[in-house]
Image (cartoon, rainbow, N blue to C red; front, side):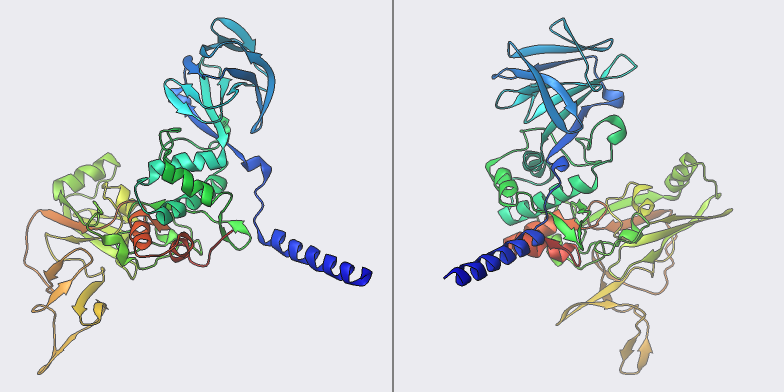
Length: 438
């Protein structure tokens, strides 16, 4: 009996050891995240703060709140002062460079916006103060999901978004550390407006994925996401210029549903508008003679555009092929004032679906011929393609699809995949090659 108990005990210990080494344990320092509400150009001299439960006063030691006293009352005016802050005209000195308030329970309102967690104030030398919301990471995720994705969408899409939001929080942890906080509340980081982002579905998404992260190898993956990839995602090297193994192009036909407002889009640019854009960037290549895509990946995402002028050329690469002219994405073709760019892949629609036509001739009964008499499905529309054109317009038509940088998860693609029965882990593993959730 004694021998049997010992063997069973050892077996249990081995099983527990396997379980705990298989689960990513969040570092306690990441449990509370700091979000800058007012900082730099938006720093405040005064804010209104309230909580129905009253407040504990103290300071932040890194991301940990240290309580020192309890403040009577529920509504306060916090103003910056030399060496500290005043609360309803009563002076409080800073400790560790800051002053912090945390509600005894419930939420806190800052300038009429409600947040979970508490608020930190950091006076600066300009007579203003940085105002920061410190909040549990899972509460933060529930609020972010409701601002980055519609709360009415399928729960599996919301759960995929929750894992992305939580993972991004970790990998971008030091993005604003020089200002005293981790992340900003805008889409430069992740959209966050306190509890206004929470709904029953976003809280559920955060709760059912609590403490789960997207992993690559032994590290949390940089879970970038955008609104729409336009039928395929992109390569990190063709957006930011650095290669990331799991941020690579994958096909995504689910992304182009009728509810996607940027499934297809069109811009028009004249030669004079292109010249004016270049002038704003202090670039002078004379009068514009041509504007074409000179590099694209296998799915038609542009990574190089060349502008030709009477006095030279100017090349846009990677994300600048989108941002320089304000296009919605890098997935587009250019037509007009010459010939359509031949660097974008073309698709023929047949019985087996869309087939990429790249460096193909068409074989007729009498021999090889060009594509001038054939209709071709491009990434954005069906058009007749000819090898040459006599068009002499001074305008260029940019036909594109998608919205955003196109790396990682496509939100509209995730929505459609969830509606087709994919769960959040399957969705994430499609968009982030070689990753897993734990």
